[in-house]
Image (tube, rainbow, N blue to C red):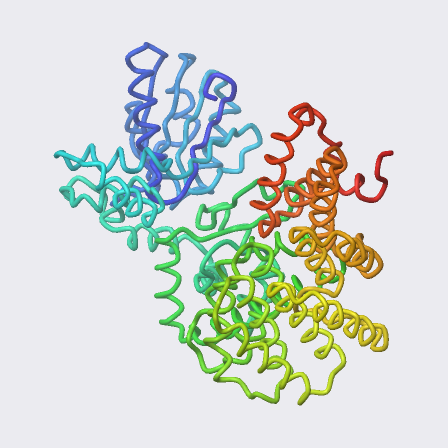
Length: 574
């Protein structure tokens, strides 16, 4: 980078190793004879203009020499200036360097700063934390001894807690702090030194964002930080950009990329922000707004699912999972809101193999919610379905409670949901006639009400499940009828999950009929749907079926359907 540009700036979070990397670079250049090297410190106690005074002293001029004399003293010799820790005087340094670069073409600059200098020809090297292997390696290098294999997991966990920050790891090894600058004797002091360089609004937004447990997008930043006083949404946008420039916020990808950026605070930045938030007396309000945002995210994800954007719904939950999990599991007084979040995330528990976790959370919050509320009724029906999915013994008692709640509520959608879950239980017990009758009744109720119940598997999903169970039991004629009903009640453009189960049922039927090629194609179309939408509930069963088909007809292994999902499902090849 130094060879390609006249100005190179190393940026990154506090303690990430900017000055260390610059010092090693200068030492290597000194050994290789790369011209004159000059070092100036920006964060120098006792100096009003650290960089300028340092440069003047390096070339033998008085500390208050004008810029023209400094330029003349540099002469025509090839020179590399290292300007280290320029944060306290970034604007003054940028003006000085611009004058030097314009008047002295032989001068190059290497700077270290938490934010870029903003010069037009500047190249930026943004340092991130150490890798998962390099963090423990640094720790072991500072704590010599016999390290055993069983120590590695604990050490990796410790370094991950420290965000694999080199300074944090060095401080954790209890070094001699006498050789460190005062601002680097603790991560909290390092964060505080950077915070003093920011505006008040930026520190306020930093503190409010510290309640968020993981990464967040701009909508969440607005919801949590934009309230009261002068901190409007416009201020939050500007503050987030400035905090990212100053390396307080870390972005997983370039903020100018196609996908909306997501940001996160490092662990030490969160600690500083939370302490500052408590001092301001705003911690309770920030937590309240975070809870409201979690409810909004869960409701939006549920809406996306039922509008047919099922992959986007799962991605939305996955991106915001730490926030949703924190709100769903915390012990607060607003249990109805937490139960609502768990119900809105029904598809996450069902499709990601999280049935036991979802059931546990529902049971945790149900006793604290009014039994007459709609959320309570929906949660009971969902709990009965999840209990069956994870093989819980309480599935029968929950099924009875969910039916009683549906009767008490009197809503056709709840009746339909309860009937669908009852059909699941009947199919699991191989009571085929009862399962058929329950789903037929649910079909009638859904048709009369004009809408299917949303917080749980659809009727099409129920027919698909029944078709698969019948086919596995050798009941091929009833399985064909159930598959036909599933096709009639499933909109493939809106319910890819139900269609994936239908493909699985069809693959089993074809296999039992001896149509290996048709079974192979249906199986791999279902696997492609699982891969595309990130469903995991059928992953194991589909792979087992595919292996069985390969053993039956090895030549099928090379005959894979086109991977362009969902085009294969909408326009099947002949």
